[in-house]
Length: 476
Image (cartoon, rainbow, N blue to C red; front, side, top):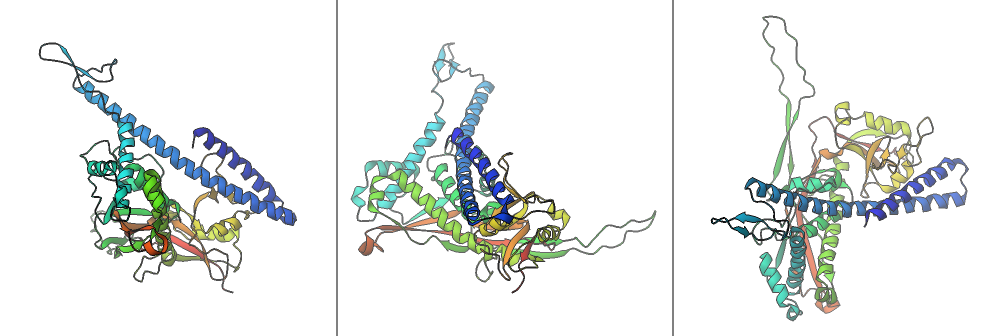
């Protein structure tokens, strides 16, 4: 997506925002035609918003890569200056003085952007060769597959393909949609095979996981190298205060804080079998890499989001809905009032309410209802960020749409969460294991199958002050 296309979408979003508000202002006089227009405008708004989010990710990735290349070239220039090696403006390389006073040309500077592109192409070919190996299409493996695999240190005969995910810090950068650090998953430096899976493939896989559900976007994700139980101690000292003492008086003994512990395991999540046709395996290495990254990310993102939202904690993750504390019970089973949202916000301690990572979470259908809610002055709580470029807000708070939460405002349903959502911690083991199945679907569909596994767990870190509260609808 070009910057011009992105700007056009921003303008379209602004126009739709105004049209939605114009229709909503007349809701007490709606006709059937107005109701249909409301639905059409909201659907168009959501489509434009999805395109903007995807376009922003593309532009951020492009900017990140350009920034990384620029930083690396600047670093090279600084090294050259430090060692008094003047740049040769004519040939793109460097010149230095030999022992006899003659000038010697050094090799030209590396084409880092080109190197990255070549690395991506090599990985795509190696992945295609690995996918073809061991199947009935083994004869389709060409020398270019073998050469690419040898360059990257990939064994085409291996049954398992380990995809190393970003480390914790780099994944947080992805969550914020900010620039990746210069050395994050970079192939600019390091020995051959040091970075087997290129940046584009991993970024695509992880962005697909982030896109489906919302929990991975708002939670703190911690990546560990192994799957041992991870324990996090908690300290609740909120009931204690200091004391004033007089001159020459001794200090009084305090009370120890309440100490607890929260644990994370490493439960196995599967993508289930991903079927790939012979034509795709044979003809398009680049499409194969894109298909696998997108589909694996989507499938693994969906199942993890479900467990991280509503998991019971019985041999699976504790979902954030399960662990959130009761905040407000709505007066109605089928509606949410403005005052109840204010009560929900103030059920969170103010020290938490003003921390980073605080916001709402709900299903898209609940968002649709909340878009129509007004305060006592007739102003909509929902505000589009189209004019400022900021995210949309509800009562000036950010929100996250999570399709694994209650899909309708119904009796006893937990419809809204509010609080410091980043206190929900997701632990993932830092590899995705990809396997190929060459015979399982051969007789039924003549296709090869791939299945991926990732190990993860989730839990709300609650030291005792209840950082996330929930709004529950009244019982019938």
